[in-house]
Image 1 (cartoon, rainbow, N blue to C red):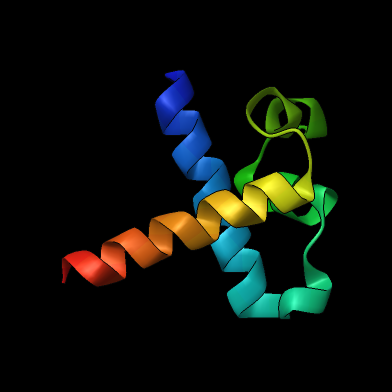
Image 2 (cartoon, rainbow, N blue to C red):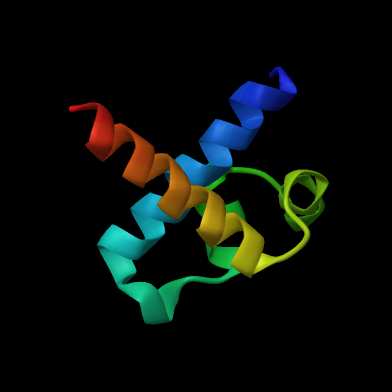
Length: 67
């Protein structure tokens, strides 16, 4: 999978974890499990959980404003 596609998959998985488990269920491990990847794959794209969640918020905000 191309890096940009993998990054989007990780962000999609973060959103899925939030929807299914709530914010308190969010962790790198839970996101990796949902994405079907290992934690190092997540860290290849994001420094930490905060950066991943920031990317998710930015993407969702951008999509909402485009509608």
